[in-house]
Length: 278
Image 1 (cartoon, rainbow, N blue to C red):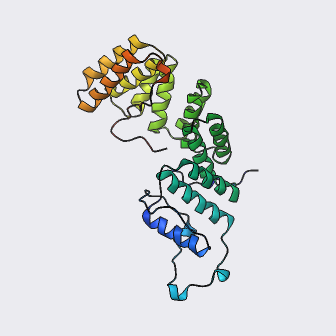
Image 2: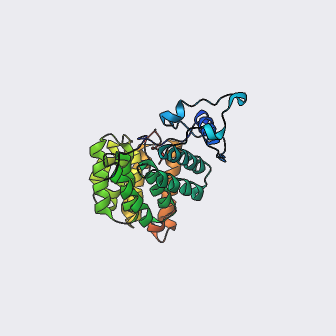
Image 3: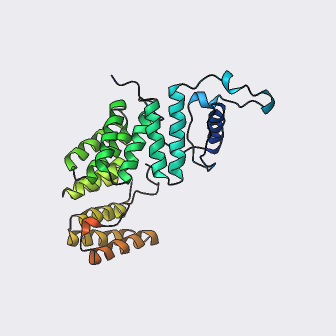
């Protein structure tokens, strides 16, 4: 039976103060922390890390007298190292750290989640999906995990399975903007344009942005005439220079791309607030 899910719910990056605390713990354990001291966000370390205060050099106890770290603490340290490596773009180093984290503590669902995301980014979607499955065994009620797995399934063309994942995410968190946008793209890819627009609106974006997203999905399905019409509507509805620039870019792709499904990475519009970082 799988143990409890050990999760911070959201996965922000490490803060500078937290990094110093973790470094002190690692030093006390006889390890050497090689991660850089970059500003990594607002990661909340576990309680055992937050209560640690390094002693003055003159009163530091010998390594032999220090209380050994538990498997859970070692896993947390490896997870922190992985997040730090991710912030520097060192994907392989991060993967190694997350693998060590789950080796130390198999309940560390956050590490399984990060492994899934990193393998997805590397293009190994089957490996990514296996890690998503492991994470879901430990967090069946995590909406972000369902949404992320839905996107992985979407990338594989498994639209019905992806739809089920998005619906589960939205059942758990009805206001989940990223899930609404991603589900809208899937609906548009399968010809359910009105339903797609509804999902985009549920994400809180404007009609112009929704039309732009719809056009992008149509282009992926080689529906160039429909896509061009949606872009014309988007242009008339919003004269914001940033929106116009993106519309121009997508219209250029309409005329120059021979294989629509091989389009370069192109983020959908998601309102004034940035999408949650994965």
